[in-house]
Image 1 (tube, one colour):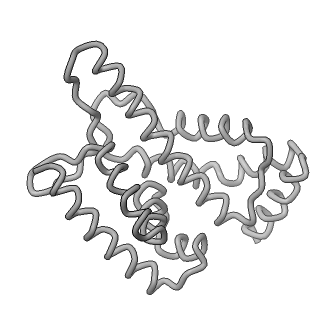
Image 2: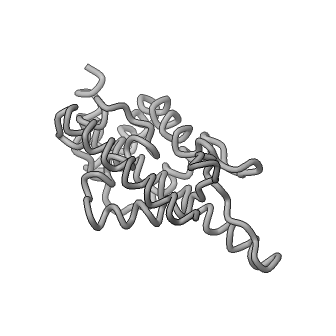
Length: 187
């Protein structure tokens, strides 16, 4: 029932009903916070954003759009995951630029994921994901939803209108490709 209710509220939001958007925010807050936690997972110590900050910034960006058009709950969560990934990467770039201007050769914020004992930088991951998107947009979208969005296989199938088997296959292939790319960039 909730998914149908959210779809109706999103339709009302598209027509400019501000009360509907408030209700969507209330109903999806816990899920958006879960996506924010996944998006921020592994950030370097001292990272300044908390999940609540990321959810709040998401709403600011959504409200700043001229048109809010979402097909359903899954589509909304997919857009939210994409925007959160962009915000986290933009935030890392801004902090990196501040560090570089403060001291020449400053370090990027890192995403704490081991790759043969090395740390993978968030910006390197973003760059590799952009390269993957040029080769296989579907695999890149699966990574974005699963890794940055924290969506389950089932939620990803709903957002992308794919079978669970296809999502699992694309997820495995994308992870293998990204691992190879990131290990090459570290070495």
